[in-house]
Image (tube, rainbow, N blue to C red; front, side):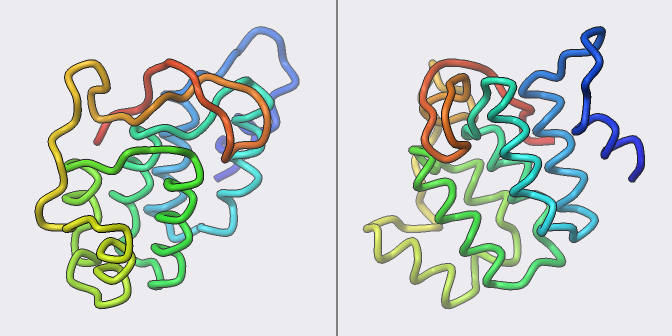
Length: 150
């Protein structure tokens, strides 16, 4: 974990993390069940000019196996506040959580069917509305690429 922390705390001008770097770090933390580390990582991501996008949430959702339902709902809310349009890849990345009544309710309250989410748009890949932008980590919009599904 020390290398992850060093990456997050970069003050070295030789290495500039990009969206793929941050998405990989978020996925690693999700896989390790370290959800409390997400806010500082997302804030650091923002200082580099990136906002979470569809790729970010695919990476996060893939790692939620050991999460609590409250964590899953928090990240669904964050995806919504980040203006990410959830699609087929996000739904399948949720794995076992697709069957949870609270998660299903979250989707149905937004008139979405978790088992019938749209395919991603051609231009959007597995992403959402964008990832490059400034401001708080949950308000940015722009264009960019992310870390993919895997």
